[in-house]
Image (tube, rainbow, N blue to C red; front, side):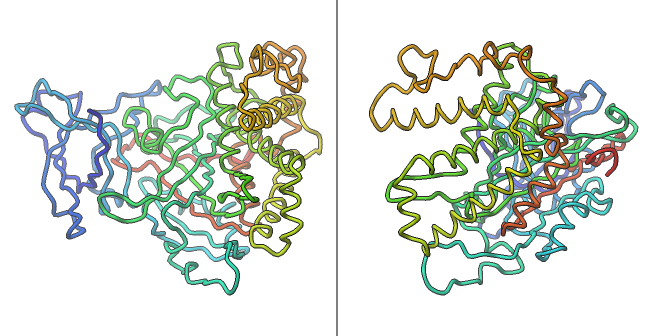
Length: 493
C-alpha cells in the first residue's frame, strides 16, 4: 500500500546489477536511515528505487539525481514518499519506489537567517529575496523576517516575550497555522523555457502551513498545503489543494528541481486564529480556504465551458486575490448582520480578542485598497461576491434551522441569486462583460505574480505579522542545462 516514509538519507548513489538492467527507467540508490535515538544518520542502510524523471515538452527533466549527495540539503536528509511495489528485475520480492522528495531542513522550524524588523525587513521582501545572492542554483534558505510585534494573546496581564528569540523557532507551537504566499520563477539556461518579450511572470498561489510534530524526529516541522488556482495545462497540475511533497517534490511533476521558489509563511494571529463571540465563531482562515475552494472548483470546469484559459483578467494571481477580496467582504457582512458580535465587541472594548479583531479590520482595509486600487469593484468580482456571500450566509442559516442548504430546486439561492452565474451561462458570460484588459487594469496591482507576492506580504509585515520565507533554487541533483530565472515585477526586476 502507499506509505509515507520519513527517511532522511545520506545519498550514496551506486549502481547495482539490477540498475544496469533497468538503465533509463530508474536508479537504485543507497541510503541510510535516520536513527531517532541517536538523532543521527546511523540507522539501517537500505537501497531504494528512484525513477528517472521524464523530460517535459522543453526537454527538461523535473528532477535529476546526479550529484545529489553533494547538495547542501543532504546533510539534514530528505523525506521520501512512495510505496512498495513488485520489481520485475530485482531479486527481492519488493522494493521501495520513491515518488517524491522533500528536503528536511526546509521544513524544520529552524531559520538559517534572521532579518530585523522595519526597513530591513521590507527591503528583504522586495529586493533581497530575489537578489543574485539569494538565487544561486542548488541552494535553499529559511529566513525569519521579524516584525514590530504586537501581543495578540487572549490572556490578561504582562505577556512573556521569550518566544520572540532571535532564533525564531520558539515562535511556533504544534497546531499553529500560517497563511502561505507562493511564487515561483522561470527556467533559464541552455534549455530555457520560452518567454514573451523577455518577461518571466511566474506563478502565484495561496496556501496553509500547519505546524506538526514529526513522528520520527519528534521535532516541530511545517506541513504545507497549497490552494492552487491553476488553469488547464499540460503539466498534470489540477486546480485543487495539494501538498508540498506532491506539487514541489513529485519527481515527475514537481517544481523543486527546475524552478526558483519563494514560499512566505505569514504568522499573524488576527488572521490565523479564530474568534469566538459567545459561541459565534468567526474564522478568517477557514473562510478564505472556503473561497479558494470555490474558485478552484470553477477552474476545474472552466465555469462550465470545459476550459480554463489564462487571460489578463483571469489568472492564478487575479483569481487567488479575488478569493481574498471576497473573504474580506464575507467577514464584513457576517459581522454587520450579526448583532451579537457587535454587542460582544462593544461590551468588551479592552479584551485581547477585541484588539485582535481591530487589527483584522485594519488589515482588511489595507488589503482592500491593494486589491481594488481604483476604488471600483470589477463587475465579475461583484457577481461572485453576491453569490458567494449569499450562499455562505444562507448555508449557515439553514444549518442552524436544520433545513436543506440547497434550497428547493437547486437553481436559485434564497436571496434570488442566479446560480447559473457560476456555471458560466448567466450574466457572467464573456459577451456581457467589459473587455478583459479593462478588467485587468482595474485590478492592476494583482496583474503580475511577483508584484502581488511582494506587496501582499509587505502589507502583512507593516501590520505586525512576522514572515518565514522558504526559498529554493533548483535543488537536488545537478542539471547543467538550466539556471534559475527571477520573476519580473513588470519589464524589469
